[in-house]
Length: 67
Image (tube, rainbow, N blue to C red; front, side, top):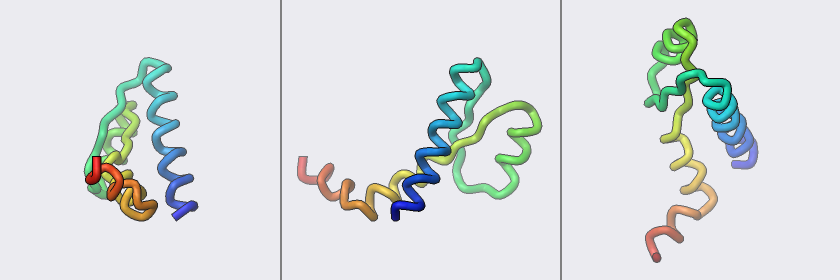
């Protein structure tokens, strides 16, 4: 889980940096060809649905249900 969390943090940080530089950022689903196409046109792609996996693995998603 910790290795996955580090990768997701890295992905989000890259998206934030791209946004600060004025570059467009696309939130994508898991498609193998889309990130390559987006990178060619200068768009940073991130995958926010992966964060759900991290929340489930860490138990954070269960806490949200109790609120």
